[in-house]
Amino acid sequence: MGVVRNKLNRSFSKVVDPTFYGFLRLAFLFVIKGKNKGGKTRVMGRKVHYNDAKALMGMYQEIVHSEHYKFKPKSSTPVIIDCGANIGISVLYFDKVFSNAEIIAVEADPEITSILKRNLTENNCNAEVIEKALWSKSGETLSFGQEGADSSSIYSLNNVIQVETIGLDEILERYEHIDLLKIDIEGAELEVIKSCTNNLSKVDYIFVEFHSFPDKRQNLEVILSTIANQGFRYKILPARREVQPFMQDQFKHTMDVQLNIFFYRDMNQA
Image (cartoon, rainbow, N blue to C red; front, top):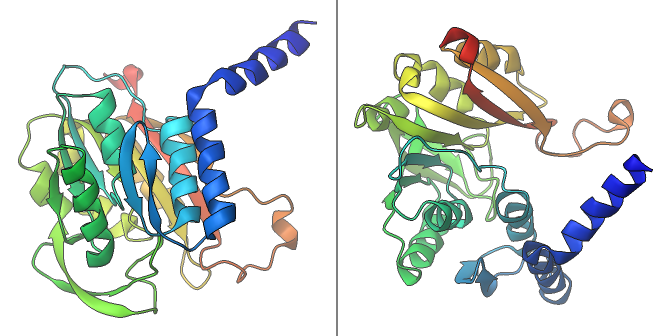
């Protein structure tokens, strides 16, 4: 009976959760307007411009409904570095939950960045926007493929442009303490993480979306060990579920693995 009661309680919680209705409203937009269509809607009570309904639904589910980035800051003025901010749903979430936070939003795609800036301006969010590609070094130029939604990357061959880079170390050096470092940069995470290990000791929480491409070595163990060696434990969740992984065509998707990795301080090493 206890198991049944818990399941019923969870189901009821979903029904009364206002973010669930927000998800249904976005699903309606998805059906009516089409998954690759843009427009404007309201998210967390704020007006949001978007360029892809399907991508917006995914961000809403993870960021707003499931609150994947929720954490407990040590102060009332946390420092949050959002690498791969996209159109700003994560930035608006941080701004709502931590009204006095200092937020830096890094986004490489100029078309996406224009929507990001518009969403922040129209919602009076004072986050700093850095329109550059996060990389191991600053001041370089990289080829960058624009996918038009949430998967633009240096590995994409579509609509390739040249973008200027900024090293993560350059950003981390500004602060003595960082509450949350979010890294969702579509495959560039390994180079970036390896370049800034000396500054990871400043950070309390790190989120990394890991991306694996079929024609490249996966290197998941390198990312895990690099950050764990700086005093972190981690939890891993699949970003994309596959019911029968052995039966999937590995080239059906641009990426063959996507994982959400949550790093937090190991109290045994404190």
